[in-house]
Image (tube, each protein chain N blue to C red):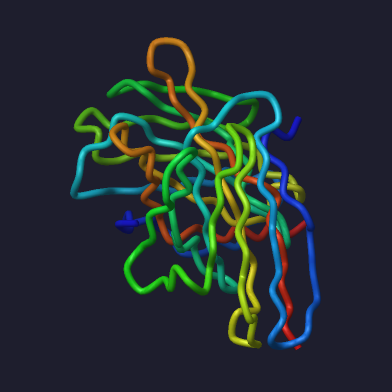
Length: 111
Length: 118
């Protein structure tokens, strides 16, 4: 599907630091989803966003759906070693349920 | 817990053989499921949409006779890689959309199937 622009591509951070990544799109989506994928596994849903401007938290994760519905960010606070993985943003099309993905942000946490 | 399962989780086969991968939605019905292929350190590439009761629709460049899809029931879709060759070796992942209240749809992925063709 159409690619979203996700940045940064990778991050090397110290344990305890906060992480921030974002996605932008040229198209409007009604639903934005954030996933985490670990090696050899399928993506796991972290947060779902449905309303423009919506700010949603899931533990140490916080994500916001942009007002224009063309962008979103994901923050991870106080990172821990198990936060390592690839984080993907995805826009969900309501008409056919197809997902458009970002290229992913690879997070590496140094203890 | 997992809401979409895949079987097998990994498979090794000889070149020329066919391999079937199953995708099941565990606690909901899915009239539509999706099949993806993922290369190392890359994002997911949509291969096809599996439709219960009708033919699958394939993305451009994906051979429908090579990757046979059957949506046998409202909880099961299968992907068969026919006459597999080493270049078909990859990580195959399925997903299923799940509706919620007030149109709060989301989509869940299976754990993936690693295929190695020798």
